[in-house]
Image 1 (spheres, helix red, strand yellow):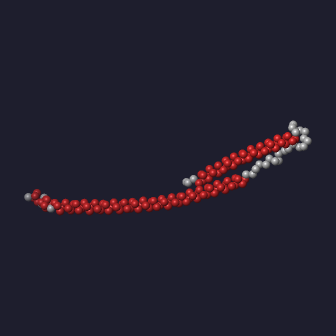
Image 2 (cartoon, helix red, strand yellow; image 1 turned 180 degrees about the vertical axis):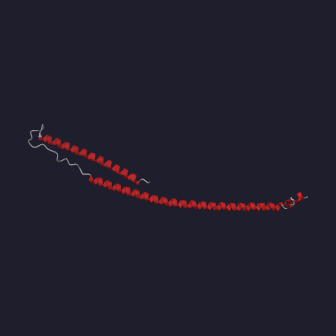
Image 3 (cartoon, rainbow, N blue to C red; image 1 turned 90 degrees about the vertical axis):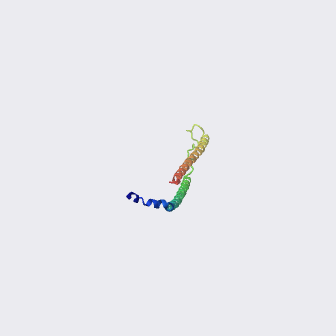
Length: 156
């Protein structure tokens, strides 16, 4: 008889199984509800953290854009100043001090007038060549100034 006494709760369980099922179902619903509330709280925390990071990133981006705009403006103003200095330094080459044949000189193979005319034409040609070379040098210097300005303005 002792063995039947150990299982005395079985008839109670079998007779009231609906109440036990409802209790287990209620416990499952309450557990699921608490789990959902925990997930909602975690989701809200995650979203708030992402929004804070997004705001910080926007703030950092605005600061970087402002710094980049200042760097670009500084580089362009330095470039313009360097080009103005370069153009103000350009002075034409004067070859007017070139020698001419003295009147009545007998050491020149050709006449003094022809010598002076040929040398004047040579001087004009040389001045044009020097101006062309100066123009190319100025263009090269401007290209170097532009390249430096581009490097200085490049975002870091």
